[in-house]
Amino acid sequence: MSEKVLDFDNRRRIYQFVLTSPGHHLRSIQRELEIPLVTLKYHLRTLEKSGLVITRKDKYYTRYYATERALSENEKKIISYLRQEHQRKILLLLIDKPNSRFSDLVENFKLPQSTLSFYLTQLVDANLVIKKKVGKESLFSVENADTIMKLLITYRPSFVDKLVDHVLEMWLEGR
Image (cartoon, rainbow, N blue to C red):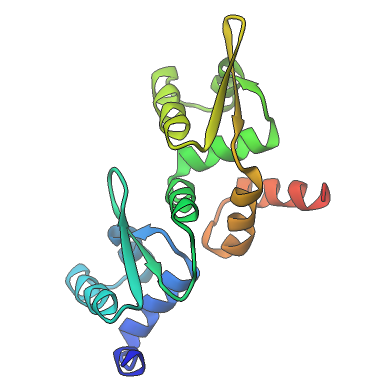
């Protein structure tokens, strides 16, 4: 069955993209592959019905994953946050500089404090970031940095980001 499903060039291309770049949402896939939205929806639905692709909804998007890659629900959650630019940058900075204060993070990001606080709260609520109170200050660190780094290494080509490359190089040198 799956062989016939993948007989179409566009569908095979979409499947290959989802396989090598898990966690993208519909518009993101559409931008990357430059396939008309209606065509993309049709092929993704067909791939899902055939069992080659599964979807997971997060707060804002439906994200696509190939069933061939056995990702845990936690890994899918991590990937969904890594696909979001600001959350990815926060995670990478906290991997690079654990126990960062909020003021340290504000200095590193060109975001309003309220926006940064919103993203941090999302990451804390998702159990990806740990918030520790030390006196009047809060210190932030990444929970499960090894899993995040493993996913970044595995799917590195799908994260076109100099910061990802920099943190990965430092991480791999330190091993």
